[in-house]
Length: 359
Image (cartoon, rainbow, N blue to C red; front, top):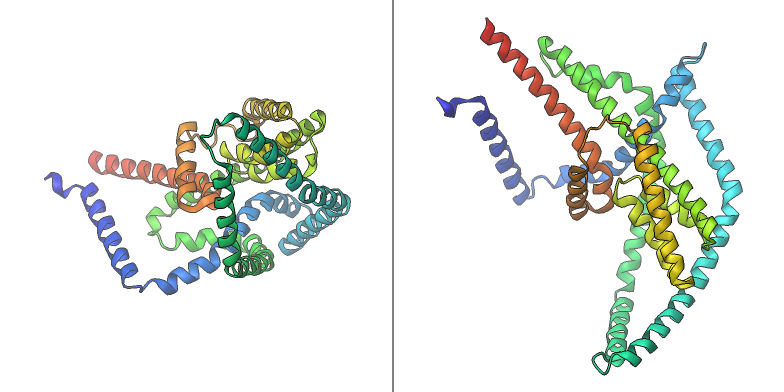
């Protein structure tokens, strides 16, 4: 009978689990679990991201003679610390200088641009827009902002404290991820029957390869985007080119929307200089995106993820609405893992049913 099909059994089980979770959440019985997950989420997420970024280096050094696992990890950690120190030594002063100039000059230029826009609006609005009303609204907004400044300040202090805690914990979590990663696969396979372990091993291997391909590839793409945008900013003579290029490199980790978000500060700076400069920034962005899409991404990422661009766009939109930038950051790898897992399990399911029917 159709209602006894495995599909309906699985759907019924999923619905019952969701109902249980709903009632547990409503009764606030999951609060300790939510606290634990919220506390561990960011350290584990960042450590996992860095794990896949530096795992190839650790494995390469392990191949050297007389190099133990812990020694290889320490060598990579010390090398990264040396690179960060060197980069800080050479880039700290230029970045500090540009940030200082940006914080001093940009507000004045924005104020000047706003004043010019106000004069133009007063000249051309023919009485339809009252600047006095705009000033009153702005004053009311600033008053509310000042009144709630204490609350905002405490939130900022809490965020900084949490970020500091995360940064202190991440190196330790990352160290043990690298040291004991070979223990994870046998641990997970213990939950499977012995006759299913080979299929489980294949699924875990595919998940590992998918995450590694995405994270390493996206880091390379982000670095290339930031470098090319920085070179473009220098060519057109845009101020604060270094920090604007670094911002692009940080946001370009998110595909599609990341580079667009990263260009927004450059557009603001360009508009304070000359409107034609903003047009040049857009041209640079288009050129860089064409180079990335046609040269860099095919070489670095290839077709290993095999996700349609429209699917990526929709995933990023939903993830941004739900969890902001962090959601956009983890949406694609999570989707890739789920896709690989379901695809492998479906193939296993089909093979087993084919075998049973043939018998």
